[in-house]
Length: 230
Image (cartoon, rainbow, N blue to C red; front, top):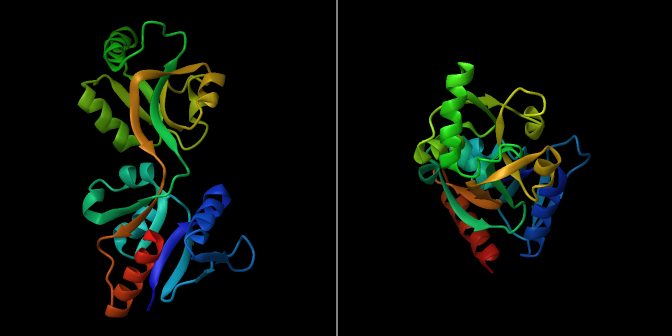
């Protein structure tokens, strides 16, 4: 048996992950074509590469099917309600940075803060007979954030793609989404609330707290962590 390392299976996140490990003397390589989810690890013994989607990695860590995994802070915090008990953050990797934010239409000139949003949400419900809709794929994080801020009159609308376009398409009144530069938000005439930062995220190396290890796997895991700590 070997220590299983889960990394994103495609795109810039995979490339940057491979580069990050290469700088620390560990080479990751993909086997065959992009349609194949097999790979190899060089520079260290006893570690196998598992290629997964970034969204799958938190659940594989939680289930103990992989020992280590690279994925975003946002995905771990969203998908694992008690993430501190299930995974350990080993190393922020310095790429894939993005902010989970709350954004409203730019023409809402009187709405700049969460307090403003609370007042508008209450007024919206009185006027329209239903709650203000927030499009997002981060239901748990947004619900907790708004609950802590005392905002209650809203409903979350699931959005798995093109979240910023939901306001223009009139399927939501505002959005909670990941952004890096804010350009897509501005292009869709949205503005971020001044206190609307829900979470700062970046690619991070995580260790499963529940994955079982043989003595050999424990030794390989220790050697792997020592190598990346340099």
